[in-house]
Image 1 (cartoon, helix red, strand yellow):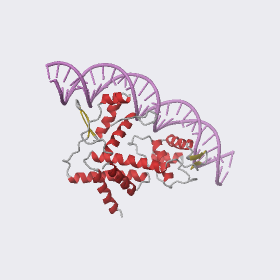
Image 2: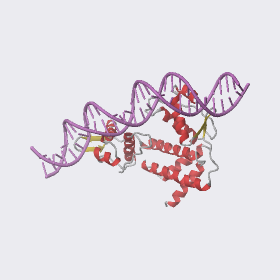
Image 3: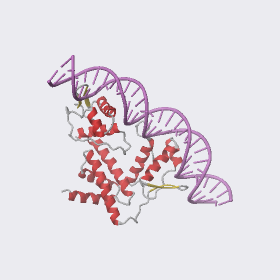
Length: 125
Length: 125
DNA sequence: ATTACTGTATTAATATTATAGTACAATCAT
DNA sequence: ATGATTGTACTATAATATTAATACAGTAAT
């Protein structure tokens, strides 16, 4: 699984990591027992400080989402985060709200956006 | 439109304000030209400092979501019909590209987004 | 025991957020 | 022109959140 953080989003790095791991689990890309990148490796990949990764992993462990074992690594736990369909819907709402706000500031309507997306869909099929 | 902030959410006040205004626009409750509460009034309503409201409004203006006019107030952004068609199309492409990138990082497909937008459309009609 | 990897802990530095206070400037109704 | 309302600008301060630096400790393979 690939990780990406957006420094301009205003969302703290460690929270972005947490979100991505939760969603990775929700969509089945990460399953129980899977090993996460090491603290140092992910820090290098994202060009951030290892402690920032530590913080993300630790919060996830407190929630029971991951198991960490000193010396061997951090793994996806048995207890799945309560993210499911509701959380996914919330994220979709968030994304669409941002999209529409941005579109409207350029005089683009919901219909314009819908039309644009339909074209994308055709183009990709 | 009523505003509410949750001090316990961990989300900065100014960001909560921004979110609520964007959401209001997205669901049609706030339309172009509508006037937002004054800086001072909203500060009183939410029991926060006026500067915090200022910050929210300023960020929204930078994004082009609202227009502020000293002396008269802050308004939902005026659309700019003088943008030519080509520029509009280019902007739409950009917005959609950004949208899909963000959506896919959360495991949301183009189809998910389309579906979400259709719901918005129904809700607003 | 050594080596190289893992996470852990503590402290320090920096950035962000929120508040307070004060003064200024544009707009509008009168 | 006046007065009331609007947003703007600036400084200062404090609290909190976030990130960084550095040293420590467990695990596993050799």
